[in-house]
Image (cartoon, rainbow, N blue to C red; front, top):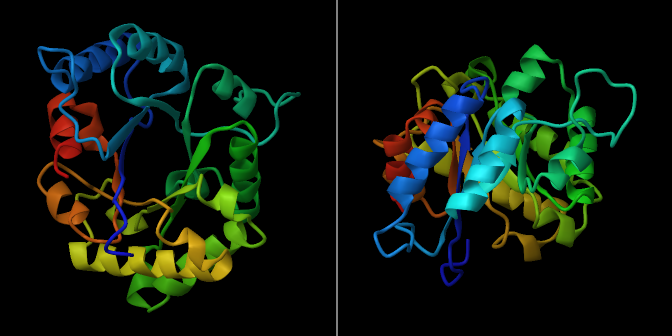
Length: 264
């Protein structure tokens, strides 16, 4: 990354299948209190952006709380379908999310790939749909422990990136956030070392430049996700190619999450 490029950071809280709408409201209120100074200004650095990703049943409640309390966070979602409307029982369309003011949508998360059999083809369709409705995809890529131990980690991530960014325009690419999440670190308490995470994020940046063009390498945001917490956030964010964190369990604790957001 160009040393003269001003680094922007995105911290995203993935609440997963936690917090009913009452609990979600309380959590947003706690975040609001912690993120605001007595004069109404935010405790966050100007370079830090924050998104929170509640369950679908809580999105409307969270949206209202963010707007009424002027909470300095973006509203996010954890998933969406790639079709706008139709006979898809139980699915949520990108159009519905956009109408609620959602700005960031997680897609390609390893849990979606593993438990719901989402392929790279499906993930690409979702990325296209999210972009079409003016939102930002947070595209998750990463390898399993078996793939890492067998020396296939970089090839696995390269394949995932190629499936999404081949024939992608510069403009669209710069609207996509990439989250490197080593599958073996998710929910396990294990975290990639800051050096390992930096190496892979640097590799991702290089590959995106080769797939799309060198003009995107400085502008694209690359997060690390995988048991990120308030203890390791500062070390991870100090790496030159890590532009943010995709936070799981720690995002359910307002104090811990704000501490992570202030680690830059």
